Image (cartoon, rainbow, N blue to C red; front, side):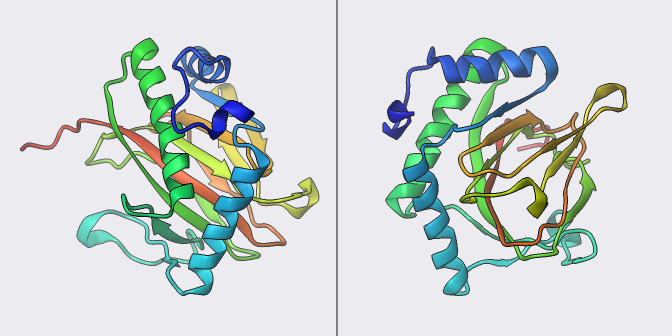
Length: 213
C-alpha cells in the first residue's frame, strides 16, 4: 500500500478500521500486506545487519530479577528498538503509532505507548504456548507482530499458532508484510519451529499500569 510509506496515516484509513473492527468483534486481526514489500525488505535487512554485528541477544523469559534464558521455552534472539534507531525503524514505529491512535479513538483502550523488538528465530527454534501479559504487570494490552520473511512457504513451518475461543486453533504463516494483532491478556499463542531463519518485529501497545508511582 503506497500510503503506508508516509510517516503517519489517517486514522480513518480502511486498513486501520479493519483492524479496529476485528479487535472489537473477535479480539484479533490478521492483515496480509500491511507493510509494502520495499519497507519489509528494508526492515529485514536491518534485522540481519544487527544479527551479523552481534547485537541480537538470546531472549529471556520472565520479568525483572526472575528473567532467565531458557531455550527449552523460547529460542529467539532479539533487540529492542530505540528512539535513535535507523530511519526505517522510525517509519515502522510511526505506522504503529497511527494504529495506536485509531484503537484509542474507537476502542477507548487508553494506550499510551508502543514497545517493539526485532526477533530472529534460528532454524528449529520455537516459543512454547504463553500469554503476553505478565501476571504482575497489566500494561501490555494489544500485541502486534509484523513478519519480515521474503517468499516464505507454508511447508517451511514457523507458524504463529493462536488458541482462540471454543478450542479453535488458528495458524498464521509468517509471510513478509503480514501483521497480526491480538489482545495480549486473552489470546494464548506459540511459535512453531521452522526449517529456515524466521524474522519479525514483535511489539506491544501499552496502557498505564497498575503499579504504584
